[in-house]
Each structure stands twice: as C-alpha cells, then as structure tokens.
Length: 257
Image 1 (cartoon, helix red, strand yellow):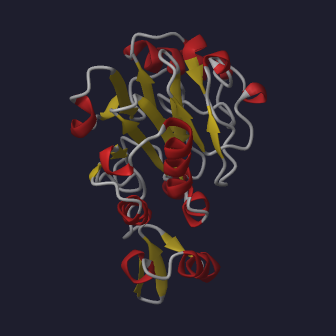
Image 2 (cartoon, helix red, strand yellow; image 1 turned 135 degrees about the vertical axis):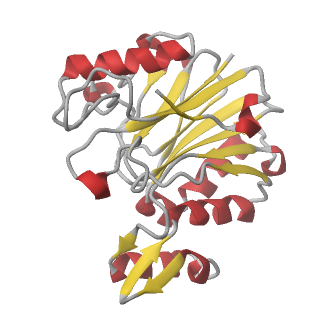
C-alpha cells in the first residue's frame, strides 16, 4: 500500500503524508488492487474500501477526506473544515473543476488520484499550510505550480524559500511521448525550460513532466524539493494509463495535525 514516502517531509511531526501504490487493496482486475478512482468502471464498494484503508493509515476516516474533480486545468482552491468529506464517497460533490488544493486547517485530508500525472505536496512549515497538486501536462502548461504557490503566499503569507515539496511518482521523460501541439504549448508557456524538458528521439517528442515541475518550483524560489524518481510506466506497482489504458488510480494524501 505504501508506494513512497518523502524523506524531506517525514521530519515534520505535525504533517502526515504518503503515496500509495496499487497493491494490497480490494479491487479486481484490471483495477487490481488498491484503486482509488471512483470515475472509472471499478466497483464503488471496492474503491471506498481502498480509500478507507489509505486514510486509516494516517489515522483518519473517509469523512475527513477531500477529493477534487480533476479537469486538467490550473484552478487552485482553498479548502476549509466545512469541506471535509467532499468527493470522498461520490464524484458528484467533489471540489469542482480543480487541480490543486491548499489548506491550513487541521485534520483535513487532502488528496490527488493519478495514473501517470504527478501527485505533489507543498508544505509550509512556518505557517503550517499544505497543498496538493495534480501535475498533468495541461495543468503544468497552465503553470499550476506557480499558481498554487502564489495562493499560499497571498492567503497565508508563505515564503517560497521556506517551502518543502514532494514530487511523487509519474511517467518519466523517456516514456512520455507527446504530440507536437503539446510540445508547442510547453514551448510557448515556458520558452526558457523547453530545451530541458522536451527531448527528440527517433522522430518522437518526449516530455519530462517531473523535471518541468521541478523547474517551475525552482523558478518560484523553492529550494527543498524531493522527487521520487519512480516512473509509473516502468514500475508495475503503480497504475499507468499510458501502459495499460484500462487501469486504476493511485494517490497522494496529506494532512495537518
């Protein structure tokens, strides 16, 4: 169940977080076995058991969980205590059209569910604020990383230099070939980064989204960044949409205490 834990975040006793893999759950093939996504064709009962198991690992209940309705955009929402439970057992009441969440509320479990995109955590230890980000290529092209940090700065007074970030498992740059229109959007949005994150090989264009997120973080002044270096396409302990098409979703969870 525990796919990855960030060493740079484990030192903070008032923060609990981890990344799941796809193992030790209740779902049947092709979603075997710890699928956390309700928006695919898995049985709801299995998914809810999987979510309960993951949240219980942190010492919380499903009613403490907050889930986003991901739309591959760059909207960032502030989450309050009254939002606890939204999206936890139904996509109908999830946080709508949102790909990043920020909160300073205790005992509110933030999440992101993915299968190749980046799940990331940003923690402000000075102001005790967390954020979770869904880093697909479209959110990253929309600079969701910077928008999330800007929200933390404007609402909670965060200092980007003091932020601590965990960048979770995602498809790597060697395995993520993209169409030319995707590459052009990245070039247009981040001309200074394009040469570092777009690689041509044997007539194909490959995009390194993990490196793109790191560069965006560094551009905002973030220094303490840990990247898992796990490729979801290569590592079969994790779900990968590009590898399997019909598959589950693993997740990242973070909660303040």
